[in-house]
Image (cartoon, rainbow, N blue to C red; front, side):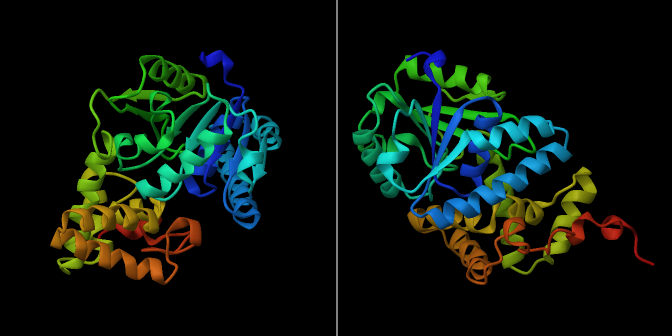
Length: 302
């Protein structure tokens, strides 16, 4: 397959990253199918996707006309057979469970045409962990997106069985949708940025779980010294508390790391209360007007 052959993209998963990847592909002229296990999940995801398109307009990242023409290119499917019809390229964003990812890819391998390329948007896993279950390992690699409202960086990480042709097509496709590819030559958990990010968030969570300082002061310290708009807990709210919990818990369980297990337990309390961050209106902060965004957050007290 050549990049010119890609016309129709399938997004597996209607969550936050599924919505973002669907939108960026549609904005660049591709027909997009977003798949999930129920139409209710998909309709809620599409509603959030439309709100995200307005946010991109407000940030000057796309025009109103481009957004209005992109949305009709996105269709919803809760049946695998419908979702797989004539698909050229898959971007998967389902929960961080290698067995689950493998099962879903295996199912779509049976339904999609042989030349279709499969990619995973996994945040911390590596593709070789479930490449054997994909069915077409030579046409499979990781293709990882960050928040499209903040950056155009994407990570491309092949596994040892990925063909050179597949890597080149995925790299070219990244360019077609306006992204800057970061090429990994060796599989690495967390890619490049996320590897550094998780170490940063882990340090902040450890400070919080040990009650060294308050959530606000941990963020205030980072923001005040580095002059950033977000601290670690504002960042977690942006990513999704549930997403950070899943990643933290997965590796904590795998490595039986006591510090990481404590951090995962700390996050789990917020998840159980439905405080998932920006997407639910509250997490470590309340939205749309979080404390850290207020002018006096970094002002001297009198």
